[in-house]
Amino acid sequence: MTIDKSEKRVIMITLALIGLFVFSLLYAKNKYRSDVPECLPYDKAYTVPKVNKLDEKTYQVFSVASMWQFEPSEIYIPVGSEVDFYLTSKDVVHGFNIAQKNVNMMAVYGAINKTTVKFDKPGVYDIICHEYCGIGHQNMRAQVIVNYPEAK
Ligand code: CUA
Image 1 (tube, protein in one colour):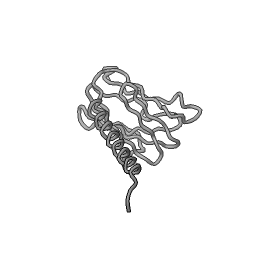
Image 2 (cartoon, rainbow, N blue to C red):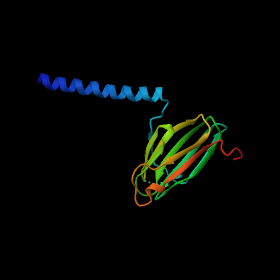
Image 3 (cartoon, rainbow, N blue to C red):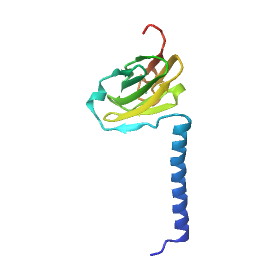
Image 4 (cartoon, rainbow, N blue to C red):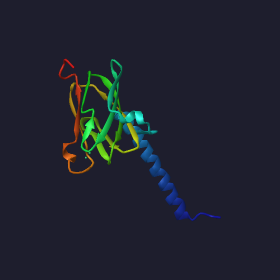
């Protein structure tokens, strides 16, 4: 069996594009230190919203989206912290965007998505839902509060 020349060309172009795509992904991951979101096996433990402090600069956040809120809605951490976000939804599909942080994930019922974000500068980082999810969509937000106010 022979493969037609034009088919061979299409296969080569496709492979080249796949290679380019993987390369861009790895390049962006290193250059912008952005963690490519991972999908984890579903576990009920992640459906209980919480902030776990692993050590002084390492945190886990179990973020649970529902119509129309994120829980926890306020996350207090010190400057320089690295935070693993584990995201899921109680109902429909929601978005999860931390604008200044190049984070763009979806919260999906029955699925756990994970990404890691480092917060090097103090400030208040808004988390917003950027996936239309119904009548209260525009009110759906939370905040990561990095060393502000100082006392917390
Ligand atoms: Cu949740 Cu839009």
